Each structure stands twice: as C-alpha cells, then as structure tokens.
Image (cartoon, rainbow, N blue to C red; front, side, top):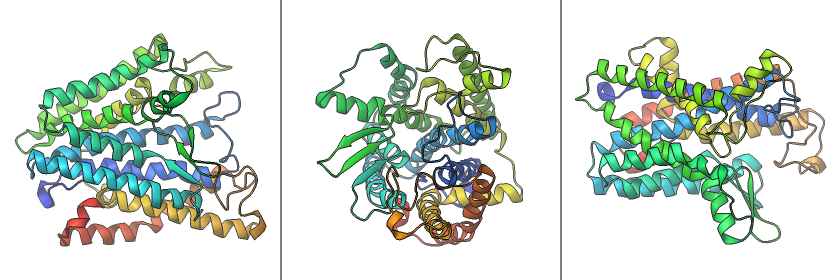
Length: 398
C-alpha cells in the first residue's frame, strides 16, 4: 500500500508495480473470506483438525501479501530517495508513516467495523507499514550497511523471543506485545473502548529495512541482467533456507510441523507458519518466492501484467476503497438474507452487519472477490492517470 513516489514513465520499474498489483488482488481474497464465508467470523483455516485443503490454501495464498507490501515499500522508499536529500527523505518518510497510521486508526477502522463510535481501533498492516516507515525515516541517514545489518538482525533474530520468558502483566508486557509479539492483542482504553493489535511492528520493520537495502538494485546504474541474477539467487536461496530450517523444527517458528493423518495434511502442517507475529520461517516462506517472482517478471509485458500494473500503481487508494466496498456489499447481503436492523450488532460479532451465522460457501466468496476487484479497476485506472498528470504535493501521500 505504501507506494512512494517513483520516477514516472520509462524510468519506472514495472516489475515492482506488477508484483504489488498481484498481491493487492490476492489480499482481497482473505478480506472477502472474513466478511462473506460462513466460517469467516470464527473458523480457523489453519487448524489441521478442522480445515480442508481448499480452505487452508484460501488463507495461505494471502500470506504472501503483507511481507511483499513491506518489502516493496522499502524498495520504493529507496527509489523515493534518489530525488531527495537524506534530510528530505527522512522528513517525508516520518510524515507519511504517521499519516498512514492515522488512516489506519480512522478510515480503516471505520471501514472494518462501520461503528461511528469507534469502540474499537484495529491495527493491521497499515499500522505496520506506517510504523516501519517512521523507523526507516529515523535511521535513513545512517550508512546503508548499518541499515542492512539492523534489518538482518531483526529479520533473523526476533524469533529468539520464543525461548525467553517475557513479562505477562504491566506496562512492559503491553509494550512487548505491541512491538514484538502481538497476535490479536487487546489493549483496553477504558470500559467501552479498546485497541485490537494484530501486527507486532518490529519484525515487520526488519522487512522494510531489508527492502530499502534491496532498492539499490533498482538504480539506473545497475545492469538489469545483473539485478535479475541477484534477485533470482536471493529468492531461491531464501526459499531453500526456509525448507531446510523448517524441516529441522529447531528455530524460526513457534509452531513446529508434524506428521498428520495423511500426506496432504502433513504438507499443510509444513506450510502452516506463524503470521502473528511473523516468524522467520513465515517471512522466508513468503519473501523467497516473491523475490524470485520479482526477478522473473522484470521484462514481462502482456495484457494481464498491464491490468496488474493499474492496481499496483495506486495500492493505497485501492486498499482503502476495497474495504469500504466489501463492507457495503456485506450490508446489502445482510438485509437481502433476511436480517433486520435489530441484528446489526449481533452477539459475538466483531463487525456490524456481520452476524456469526452469516455467510456463504467458498465458491460464492470467490465470486464476490472477483466482483470486488473488477469493480475497482476503472476507479484505480482513473486515479493512476490522475497521479501521472498532476503534481500536487498531497498525491505523494496517497
């Protein structure tokens, strides 16, 4: 979602927009599942005892989105810095990061809940992107090697906390949850309001810092074939590292894989890494293939990649709109299904207009997903053209 300003026209790296557009569309599958699947409110697609392969992969395929967002945001931040001084880039990243967090708290919380009283504030991927951008803004004046080392230490080392006894109460426990271990952490704000934090921001910051370092590969002075080779070797190496380390069950994820009732479910268990907070193995499992794909699509141009580029050009715009559209469709289907105004805030429901017994089969969910993404194509194309033909300062924040 954090599509920072990059050079337009021929100078733009189209593979970044293509990959970003692809993960934007895939991401919407998970959000449609949350709102429209009959098990979306309570069902866990990663529970080996109750899931099905189709249900599992509907969730698993969307695991690639958040890590790719953060990584590409880091690359985009580096490219944004090619036209700014370090001081200007630092100020821009900090301001844009704070703006993204504000959007998460105000626009995205309302899009998810439709609750005008804001009894809950939901911190998701925009919170992680915004916070990471602020941290990057604070360290961006440091030598590139320092940023890379810091990113690598976070990326590879944060799972050491799995072996440490952490405080369970008090201010220290809350801070550790917010920054390092959040996995659906509820933080009370009085009797009627609370913060629901899904994203432990420090591990995600490591991804953005490494993305910033990888941004050096996209400078004009880098030979495209050299860039492709480095990306390909890196992506395949990270993927191989994931497979080997995951097989050992020694480090990198709090949930070890285990032999299941048959081979298919054993594979699912092997792939079932932890997103909240993002484990090392989760990040390697997703970023390895993403970096590999970034190398393979560099010179790919066809009608499909042109469509993906439209979404990839305006990820922030698309992200905000798609949540509002999904929830508006939920309202329509809520009343069409026979629910009444008295059931808008149903017991056990986290979102308004989304009772726990509401929902459809996965097939219908995918149809709604296709409707959502196709409906947003023309608005995204319009806004993409608008950004390319206008130079207002505020466009760099959208």
